[in-house]
Length: 87
Image (cartoon, rainbow, N blue to C red; front, side, top):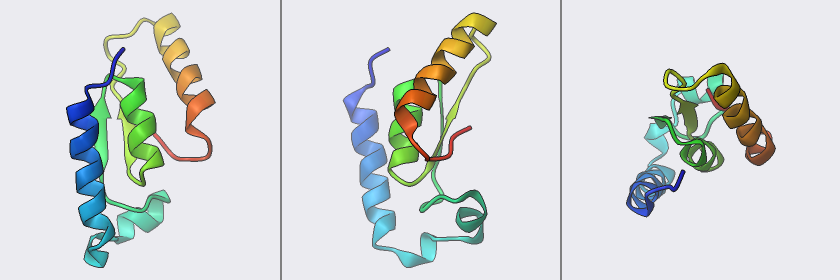
């Protein structure tokens, strides 16, 4: 899957704004181990990784995947995400 660069630009712009606004760092961020209260629900594994690495939490929408496809997507995410949390 290709990531739409406009979506990534929008997400990065939001994160840039939040970075300079300390009031956005909430208790939920501390509890989840994330920097910013951004939750990106997507079917695209690239967006999950990009959002999590940028300080939010990427969440993979898995309803459309077969068990085999889901395993493949999750394995790919695990290989690329490092120690960042995702859902």
